[in-house]
Amino acid sequence: MKKTILTGIRPTGNLHLGHYFGACQNWLKLQNDYEFFLEIADVQALTDNFDNPEKVRKNVKELSIDLLSIGIDPKKTRMFIQSKIPEIAELTVFYSNLVTIARLYRNPTVKTEIAQKKALFGNEGESVTYGFVGYPVSQAADITAFHGELIPVGEDQLPLIEQCREIVRKFNHIYGETLKEPEALLSPTPRIKGLDGNEKMGKSLGNAIYLADDEETISKKIMNAKTDPEKIKKDDPANPEICMVYYYHKLIKNENLETVCKECKAGSRGCVACKKELIEKMNEFLSPIREKRTYYLEHPEEVKQILEDGTKEAKKKAENTLSSVKTSMNINYEEL
Image (tube, rainbow, N blue to C red; front, top):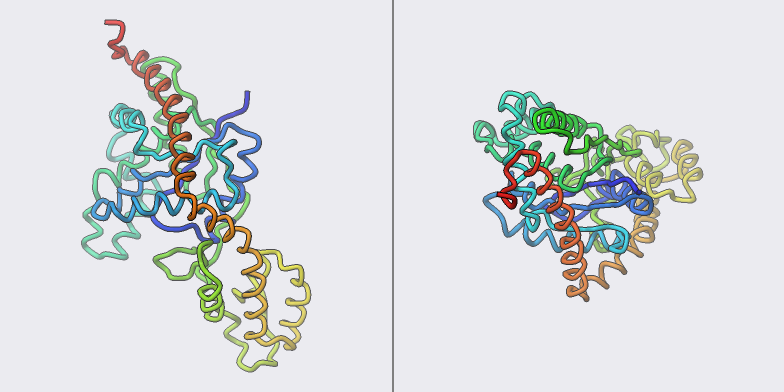
């Protein structure tokens, strides 16, 4: 029997290179060897977009197209919409009795995200909702609904997996062995930097290259990428290790990388020429993805069917899990 993997992504925007290299590229390999469930986490997206549900709805389709365009295979991966699996919401209610508010506030991931909200919104950041603080409980429901055994995550998400493990252990201790305790599967790729050199790439930072970007957009973004600030004139030698243009040459595995590095250090390569080469190589890299995106944009009925089929299969598994949970809790009234 193949082990089960559950992973998810929030539909709050299109995929960018940070998503692709940081997570999605690994998913493409994992889907070949595991029973793979990929959740479009629209309910989780609503925890901080509750006042803009149309944004979430629109991005469910956009994100699905992106995922199919990079090579997520519906024959290998069950791609589904979180809100269409009501069993997850029911499990969340049951698990919420197993976690204290104090424990949720101690979760390092939650603490960090609350701090980020305060930094962005000042006093308004104090007004975090129950849903926002409690999303680790919902995530535990996501994982256990499909008996997720391995969960691909970055290091910043490890506290969420540990929270899930605690919930599973407490449930099994009270009600008997029912749920599987998941293990984290750390991403082999570190966090991808933004074009501005920021350690994180993101829409809110305006430093991301999206898989859906056209050639003109790519060109404008790369021409504004951060380079070595000490390089003033075209022929000045520079340090490629602090240049985001070189960073992206390396990221997309430009076959000319050694020459790029050598010429940069020698001062025989100007930044404009280096950026133009990166634009060309980046567009070559994204070209196959763009072709697939065009196909799926022109065949929305196929995307809809893939999501319906994946959701149907996922729901069957979640129904079985919920039935087992209710039986263990002695609230499965089918036998009353």
